Image (cartoon, rainbow, N blue to C red; front, side, top):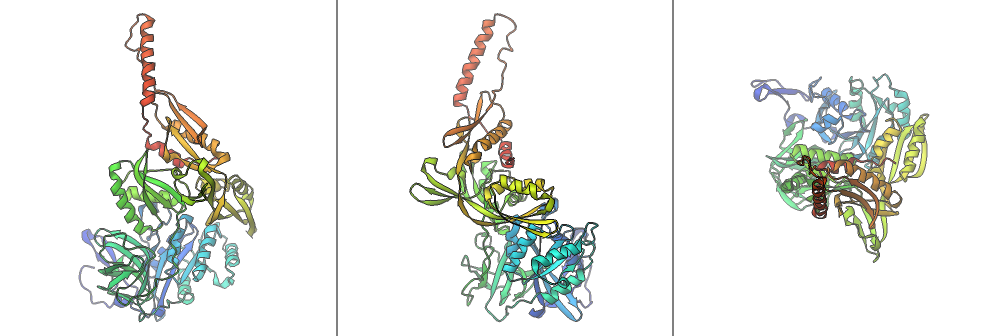
Length: 635
């Protein structure tokens, strides 16, 4: 729109302004148009198993309410990250405000799209704390999956109203009636409460919006109460500083207001305020029940934390909001810059990334082989891989990641108990009384004809059988107790292979149990490489040692001397591979003559190699560290 207009705006209208270079930019109406009674506000999210159509459904909801133009050139509009589009998965929860008119009533719908992979359950839990309801989406072809049940339990624990929806009814392989029966079985609802839709074609979207307005309750907080707002996400902007995404539970947040972060106790001033439409749009105030963003101009990323409660600095709340649980990392690995001069850059990158991904835990550590780096905690292997790629792409870093491991509880001979999340911290075997490892409660849903291979895999992975339930005639739910360490060594990929891609899993951290665990060390040229150390069951240590030594033999280039790669348990060598010396033809300059001349050169070379072997050092290439990480336990 090139100039001013006298048109009277209607709720839900989308104005399009031409930005610089003629690029259109969507711009939603000012806040006065959206100022509604809090009884007409609905805060809800979409939860589902991975690849059940959450992001596509969010597109249709935004089109139906006029937030984006129909047929947008960017499918999965809320998946903003390049990584999300490349991998076809949602990594970050994204919020958007929608204006919905039903008859003569205008509704403000605050929608949050969530990830579906089990590694990003913490994103879902943060989102649920900011909502009153959830759309539970189930694929009409795949049916109820493990993460469907896991997310449902989270929603029920948070006292959310669940609206069940069967998606992808347009597929030729869809079985909506069968899947509806599965949903009724797990939710205990009547058949009329289960909705059908196709997020691809838009069928059933209007009925879903009506169900959201009718079934999900409005927020209960009052603008007249003391200000309390939950920070459910945040990011770093080079101009605005830390931008926090909040749900105002009670009270009113205004521009220029002095506020306090109750967790950190820091005082900040509101410099920018608004909501997402889905682009950031400024507002003067955010009232009880609303979802939006706030920027205070602070560049100190440690002062504003996800899960914290924001309140007025004077006369504020006495206690923070309950219900938000900080995620506990379950997989640990070391992150090291290839160039040690990038150590400080890596520190700053981790601090800023943690704003956007609060599940990352990190602390400085040093390695004899890799130099200075950070010991980082993740929620799973996919989470670790995503963090590594984001650091490399968004902050232009070249990184080495050590082999992943879990945290162990160790009791020494003096009965002192301490936690070990780095194998190099494990004391010598003669000082250890017992080692306990974390177990998870594992839930697997698989087709009935795949039960045999899946149970065989679980048995090989030291799982303890709990229960088996038939969800339908050909859908089986298997429950196990499983060591978490077994899961981080390629279990998910092997489960998919055993079930031809049909099985799904969900897990929950359970307890620590004692086991026959030992520290497996890898020696290269007689020196322990702490980055390759791991804690494994005693009976599998020789096989695991042979496997790792073989991988290193292929990745470490030949030296001018013979190189030994050894695996050791408690000082005893359990596996060995030898990298032959690189041959140098020292007799190439000899053109004939007596053989004694050649023998003399060979003896001189032999003595030189012997001396070199004694003082030589081996530089391990980055490819070897990557290979050690991706090596899976093929048992």
